[in-house]
Each structure stands twice: as structure tokens, then as C-alpha cells.
Image 1 (tube, helix red, strand yellow):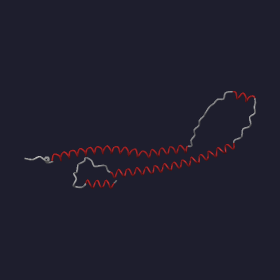
Image 2 (spheres, one colour):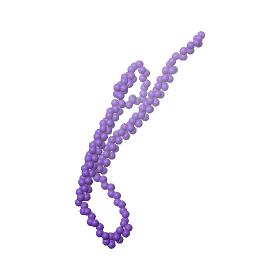
Image 3 (tube, rainbow, N blue to C red):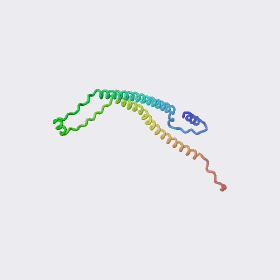
Image 4 (cartoon, rainbow, N blue to C red):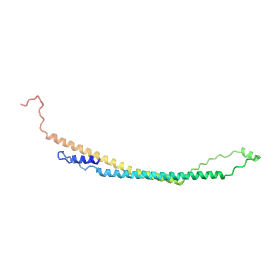
Length: 179
């Protein structure tokens, strides 16, 4: 892209061409390219950080599931086996009474898991923020470019009008005599 810009600037510097004054110089493409390069470098670092946090979180999650499996298997082995039920008159009465049905839902996530999620969202926000700023800047640059193009078109119209007024009278068409 830089070579194309260099070619355009070389072509603009040729003395044969008509120079049209423009109010403001064009955008600094080198600065834009440098800014985009920096943003993509930040993007790469952000992606590497996300990958690292995912690996860390998944390894912690794996360790927690192994611990949970070990705890449940040892608890199941240590739990006493229930004694066989003996029928008594009281147990028959207890069966006929309505039993209160209650469901309790308990959601417990390990703190390491929520920490990984929190860190991922923070990394994602940090990664998306420069992209948002770049698109906002790009929109402003596009508006400036549109204004510059409109100014150039007006300047061309003025130039064409000057050329038309300086042209000698039209030549007669073929077949007509000049007497």
C-alpha cells in the first residue's frame, strides 16, 4: 500500500499536470497504517491472553472435577448402608400422612470458574475497545474524505469552466463555407 501511495505522490509531483489547490492535505497513510499495525498487535496479545486464561481455567476445572469425583466416591464408600425397614403400626400411619414436597435448587460454582469467566470478559472488553475506537475514527475519516472529494469536484468544475471560457470560438463544421 505504501508503494501505491508513493506512486501517487510521484505522479502528483509531475510538472505537466495541472495542480488543483485543496484546502487540507490528505490523510497521513503512514500514521494510519502504523495505528492499525499497533491495534492488530494488541489484538494478537489479547488473543494469546484469552488462550492462556482458558487453558488455566480448564486445567483448574479439571482438577476440581477430579477432586469432586474422589470426594463423592469416598463419601459413598464411607456411608452406612440403611437397615432393613421393620413394619410397625407407626410406620403405616406415617405413610398415609401427606408428605410435604419441596424442591430446593442449589447452584454452586467454584470461585476459580467464576474467576475465569470474569477474566475472559475483561480481556474481551480490552480487546474490543481499540476496535471500537478504530471504527469510530474510520467513520470520521470517511466524512473528511467525502468533504475533500466534494471540494475537489467543485475545483474541477471551476477549472473546466475556465478552460471552456479560454477556448477559441468553435471551428465551423464541415461542409459550410466561410465567406
